[in-house]
Image (tube, rainbow, N blue to C red; front, side):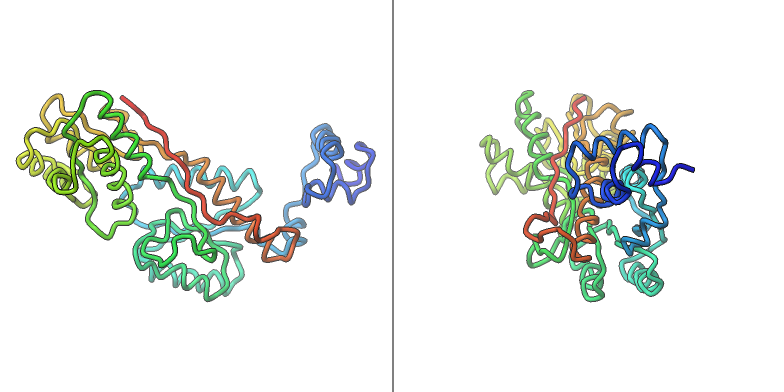
Length: 333
């Protein structure tokens, strides 16, 4: 097997320099780093992952809970992107089943007791979520996929998160509908106390108010709420069109609701969704794409920086960004 000494000899540097390239590249000049990386490629050197984990005092593992998520297509894409990013960074993922936030905390307790993981990735963020407080109290590293809705400070430095700017995405989609000639644009949203749903609803509101196509009073008549399933979306569409028959477009805060609206709407009614699922693609309605590889990259970046900071390395706290709001893209059909 090729050793670190073989790589050092090939590159004309010391074994310590090779170790720095692998474990602390910021300590090495760019030209030297390129030479060492070229030698690694030429010799086919494979670093000893177990030894590296021991040196860093990390397990090299992050944990993610698997819940009965209603947005399964989106969740599957997220897990696939996270697994791909973790594999590239030589990080393992531990999955555990969880049916509630309280059940997930039980898994936290077991995993922390065994020192089996370096960090947790939280999904399904909700108002009054008990998980961040538990992890903070027990000094555990974590990143949320989604903002801490209901928290007194969404930019709390103790609560790291990565999220997609649903408000900006829905605003841009509504503006697209306006530019293509629609003037009476309704919304099918989620019930109140859904932080994500409320955020997306505000994007629709922003666009209509900015275009002077509605005022605060008329907005309420153009909006209806429904739980996130196809049947509820179908019923909401019928009720909203009965109430406002002049609606010529519908913005839905999820592809699930948009699918139900498609089943109940008359021909010619423009309908848009959110998440750009295979259903949106097959039925042909416009939707909003969340870039899962970018989300996974940001989550793994924050975890790495938090762990290095906790180990008193050369990371300066003021240079670390714990909150990342990513812009989605429109998939127009």
